[in-house]
Length: 409
Ligand SMILES: [Zn+2]
Image 1: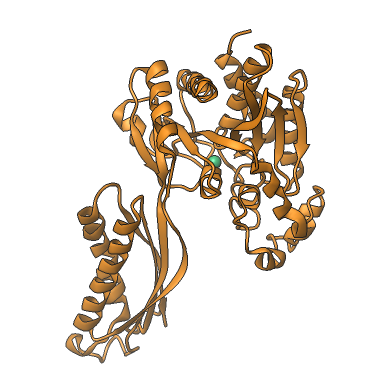
Image 2 (image 1 turned 30 degrees about the horizontal axis):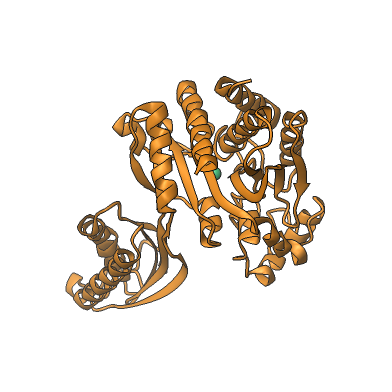
């Protein structure tokens, strides 16, 4: 049987029916609906001579033994955010299942091929993304914090994991899974508007953005809104407002896809009759180039100092979170360009703003690449998330072509 990309689209619709409702996909990790999705995948691959294994972090693996122990990995995630879309994560799991079926029909592959359904990519319930892939990659170092996490109903993460036979203390034993990995491939919807604006169905992902996330606290003086003349004010919000606008200039001058977001400002005392005394501003900056990301942060700090002086207020910075840019493998990027060009006539390279499991695998030193398929209107994490069926079929062909090229290399 040759590859049947239309079957992947049918299966995605089937999964949507099985695990979604009128508000969208409900496959939140460590829930019964998520377990139902894993059971569904197990059924889909029952006829394929691939061994199933759930590892110590809850990742679901299907291994098709090849002539060599060296393994080609294809990975995605069946978990979704609440009220999520029908494609985020599960496209690659179902497309990978189709590739596995095609390979199994052709007899023993040259190298072992493994499909992985990563556990809890989204972190929707406990706020910790990339759970299963970080455990396998060896970058999970926050088990003390993870032990304290609870969901909205007060259920602790360790208890939620235990209900699915995962022991948090042993999760990092999943690390053994990447031992023989020679390459990792991940197909994902773009979740942004770039490919649609270029009228291209498919793209090759250069890597994932580095992120600098800070809390910028501006401190002025609370004063009566009626009795304080305009030139006597030390208004903390003025600094935050100037920076919120100036990051547009900073991103534009940095270029190459730079993005800066002032995601929120909390003002105190926060009443209509007072000048703002403190303004806590959240700043998120992203770039694919580590040096440019560092320079962009330095420029924001320099601008903030200038605004603080102009407004006679103080400013302080606290780093909330950060991750370095992760660049995918050059050789795999070249093969991915060939595969995408073969099936759709043209290839375009673009960075990924969101993080993906592929970033964790790449961090572990496994040669990695991702393919993106166009998202309509750039929407994701909503039931409005969509991709044209013909583009989904092309994406399955591209993943299969890429897997064939990697196996031949
Ligand atoms: Zn995803």
